[in-house]
Length: 378
Image (cartoon, rainbow, N blue to C red; front, side, top):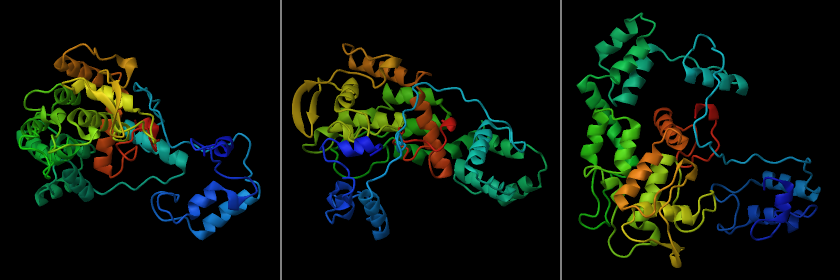
């Protein structure tokens, strides 16, 4: 319903969204007033209030006037494949940090007041909780408050993220839960067979303590060592499972969601209805990790079509489908961590931003094609 023409033409059903001049005969009004939960719009949340329905009805009865050329902005966003340079806005009020400069400019353009700077006691408490998950010692708080050095906040962050082993250990113990959740390493429910999943806790903890670079971290998860292979091995469930829950499909889903901010669960059963990803693309990605040839299943029915090991972004390079499995995984790890793959960098930044600030630059974090509130930050 982005344009009048598309709304009148209808979608796959061919049913027009509304009939100009006839609200009572319009599909839009039928949907928003329906008592059938499978049909009612909006699909989630409360139904529209009567006043809003009345406004829409009067608009349609009036002929649904629509300014020529007007189109609603799509909520989808196609990030450029590679990262792009950002022209930094001018410095405001002495804040020279590049992120501050972008956010200050965003506030200015949106007509928003600059938030007040938090006091030193709040800052030291927040930074400790964010980075090591523990409150600072009272004497450390007093020393920080009484410190008159202009760069004391930067120095505090550097200390908490520094080379001191005890500090690195505290950081690793706190952030282990974040990565456990993201990598599905914390799953403890029932249903998987004995030995049907492998934890990577030891590798993960050591990687955080060592401050392993993100590109190396990702490569070791996709083309794993024996210690880190639990991520791509997924969960082997008991009994017969849906085609969309097999280990190779789990691999595609987990790699897409964890490293690219792409949700392939819909496209594991059929072409996605809400995104551009297709069933073929999901199965081709899954085939990289498959031990045997992989047949596409659409809505649990075999199609007779076979997947060809392949990567989602052919412009960066492609997988050799004839290579052995280990080599295919190594090729994928290399493609994933190429500097030209901006999806990985944006996804990691967005997830860390959401962790530290409560909401991502793109929300939800597993839908990176949703329009960000500030694209320059990504």
